[in-house]
Image 1 (tube, rainbow, N blue to C red):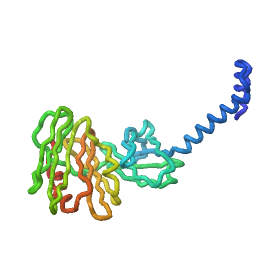
Image 2 (image 1 turned 120 degrees about the vertical axis):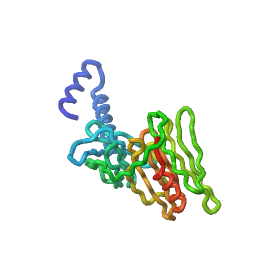
Image 3 (image 1 turned 120 degrees about the horizontal axis):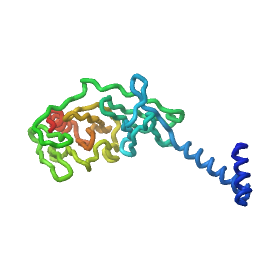
Image 4 (image 1 turned 45 degrees about the vertical axis):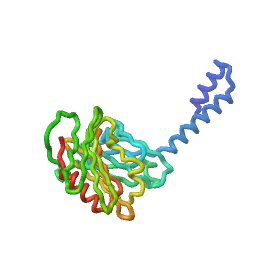
Length: 252
């Protein structure tokens, strides 16, 4: 305890009749609690390639928590975890995956996002329905059964493709209750190979996250503002059909 805190404790003790030992013990407990809380948190800063800090960057541990960077570009994340995969996404910039080891971030982790380029896939536009957010309408590929989904809160499509007697499914959804930028724990489970790019639908940028299992099953999750397009752990020939339906589809 510092001399300043000790003087303050003496003054409080005289004013209230409290035991000084109680004040010292309370101060020690508070200091230990703060120190322990700080020990359990790592931190990082997101910057642009010109060195400026970036606020409102979406930071997510895949399949778990998410948060947005603060005005100074800072984000916190738990310590003590095994290596984790973080996804960073902000409109106008190239999405990034970062595998963070158990010791990284103790003294600050720096992440640099590059501006997105024209290399990002841009889906064509189709008929307009006056919606605030774009809806992906998949291409009608041979053998793919499409069904339109719509109610008061969301709109989208589901697609089913049968391969060797087993049906596989993907769906697109836009609405306030769509999972959007939050790949689920089940989707992430078992994926060993992950890569991320971006795709533009109706003027909105989505991240395009892909992964595969050790056995070669493929997954894809496109996410943006209240929008998602998803398939999970399907054989490569099925993934090819779904990718064609997605990448050759249109946005309205």
